[in-house]
Length: 377
Image (cartoon, rainbow, N blue to C red; front, side, top):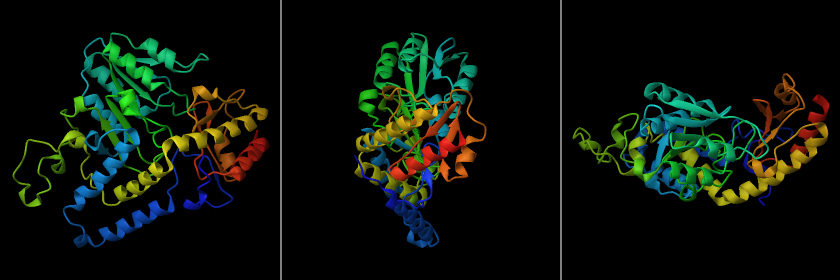
């Protein structure tokens, strides 16, 4: 269990922020790294050619450690949609095949598959909500010999519903289907092991549970896809791009591994130093420890919210860092705004009120949340 880390953040005592699934706050030292980077960019003569490679490689290595991969497996991307588009471009889909998604899945992990299905004459199969046994059994039933792609999160973005990706990965391999995972709402707070899950692609935006800046993320590419086609052809992804004087000696070869899939301007002199500091802190805390700590907190919140008529999924069927509270009827109109007026910050997605804490939350925040909910419901 990790003690409260609020001192590392710029969060006033009267703010109860339970909205990490929307956007994480930045730690003081992450802000400082960004400020140093902006100052450096103001004097570009201090930026040398090796700097285009050193920080990206550090970030790549840290993210790889987070998911039990190798640095060669990681591409630097600007967004989840960039990563899913890359995956869609590199997975074969034939006419009549299917692609599996979840009901109410995040749009950036739905739209690319709809477009791909339309282009290839394939079909998107949506696994519906329902049942008391969670998502996994219905996902497994939906994967057949006709399935080309299974595109999922690790936990559902509206309520934290958990998916057994190890079981799903095994079924995908048995059926010859590719597994594409959006881990934006879980990575950094929920353990994810590519060796155990064996996804084809795993995509993460970094501004939520990785506690980094906006417009920066990472893409895991399984080795069998690393000779694929990138979305763009930028100079730095090519072999020998370290030699700036020789850039006009155009090369058909790429940098090794997944680096060919890097976004243009991936050196990102401001955002990447911030991401590096955030990733170092997550690894120091340990994702298993983060998950254990946040699981205890969301469990306490669920227990205290139950007398107010708010329901939560069975703990074993949801990610521990993610609490979706359901109402007896519809979500009260304007609920997030009414809570926000009392400095309690949550979000509503679908029919769930998302309560998504992190290590900056404390008992006083939980008391404030329950007290304000009691007043507005």
